Length: 169
Image 1 (spheres, one colour):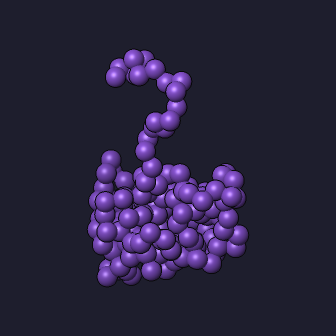
Image 2: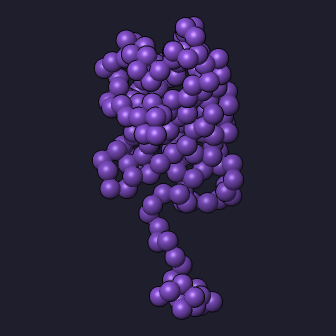
Image 3: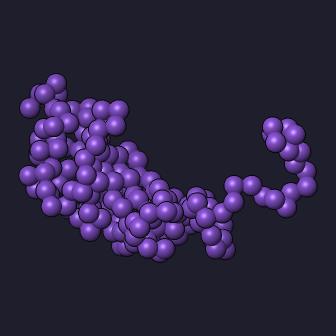
């Protein structure tokens, strides 16, 4: 297949042929094919994307977390993968329930996920089962909270050096 014929529809149909029951939803915000998938199948889906001889999504460009405090499935892990051969990107999302979220590590599929999973753990508290060295990477080891969770006030009301007039309040 030539690079100009690879489309969102074709890529989706290729993935759907293997994982139809594992795909919860499909969107195309700003033209980017985005699949919300079953988190228990994340290894299988990403391995397929990497190893498929036609698609060749061989590069994980980003892995990050999202916290949705008001939803049943409070956390989401987002994977951006790139086919360098076709210059084509897709986004895979996996929603996870619970206050102590767990998902399988994809370091075995994409070694570049190593530090990205550590950073996501450090800021959101998402545990990547099977990660070779899951520990904090940017915050101190003694820290007991995960700072990017939406569980904390946005401002420190104990500070006396703030002048609300400067902030239009």
